Amino acid sequence: MTLAANRYSPLYFLASVGAGGLTVTFFMWLMFWVPHTGRPVPIFEDNWAMLTGGTLAQQAMVLGAWAGIAIFGFLNLKLLAFNLGRFAAFRRSDAYEAFAKSNAGSQVLALPLALAMSVNAAFILGLTFVPGLWSIVEYLFPVAMAAFLAIGWLAFRELGHFIKERLHSGGFDCSANNSFAQMLPAFALAMTGVGLAAPAAMTLVPVVAGVSIVLSTFFITAAIILALIVMVMSVRPMLEHGVNVEAAPTLMVVIPLMTVIGIAILRQNHGLHVSFEAHGTAADTLVLLTRFLSIEVIFALFGLAVLSRVGYVARFVTGSETSAGSYALVCPGVALSVMTHFWLNKGLVAAGIVAKYSVAYWAISGVAVAFQFAMIVLVWMLARKHFKPVSGAAVPA
Image (tube, rainbow, N blue to C red):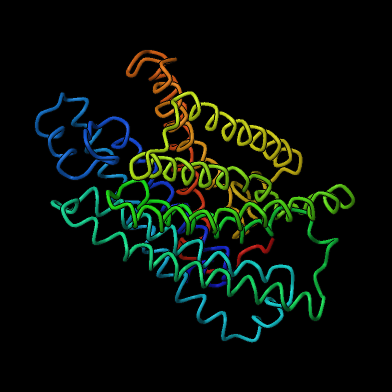
């Protein structure tokens, strides 16, 4: 029996989300380093062409990306299955009623967040490893949008239940809301929105693109509204009572939220360009991505300063104490890696500021890869702590 199984929390869905995010980071290698002329994303045939006809370095890159996508894609689905089973049992337990009535009740939104990430990861696995998938991709878009709509319905149902209960009976402890833990529902809605935006970036059918843009805009807008409300609600309790130490990693949840929203907007803009002749410029994209990246860097500095001050890493990552919320540390690093890739390739390179494959290009790409491998190390450390079989009782947080 593992610690995660003994002391289950819905926050362990974030372990699945983190693995899915690392799958995306390896797909970034293929996205920006493998030519895919005429298509917005690389497919198996593009990768195979480089693997069989590229240089030794290019072949190694493709094999490394394939290995990373396969390993973390499998881990994403494995951890999702573990969480679905444990969450079903947890929801039937006596402890669930008290959990649902507390501030922590919103953690159930980690379920639709993980489901949405797994759908995205599954699509990446298909593009990467299934030959000929692009020939039927137009038939897959309606199926994908239906799946994301079902996940979105689940997210709104759980969020609506949480809010209705608080508005009817009260019970929300504002003084204990001294973190950004309540930002999790906004993250779930944004992840659904970015998934719904994917067809807009890839389809050649205007109706599909239009539906994709409309639906994704709805979920992204809802996520932004909810995130702003949560930030206003949370700042005062943190200033009055200090940050909740165990929930301190949530101070950086704004980082993956910005990356997800930024990618959704890029996908929408591409769909508007291809299907509706709405032409933006490379400079517009550069400014947009720079704004998102600036927000992420600001919240990264803020979050790291607080984590250092409260000694979070020494207690919950390398120390003896455990917290399922430690997995919230993975998403910001993954998001910074992905956003750095997009900022470089869709911003700096597209605008002509940095030449592709120049020294400056590889230096900035190295920053993205450094974030990526730092998060791989973190996932390994957390897995040893939370999912390694244990015989004795763990020290509670």
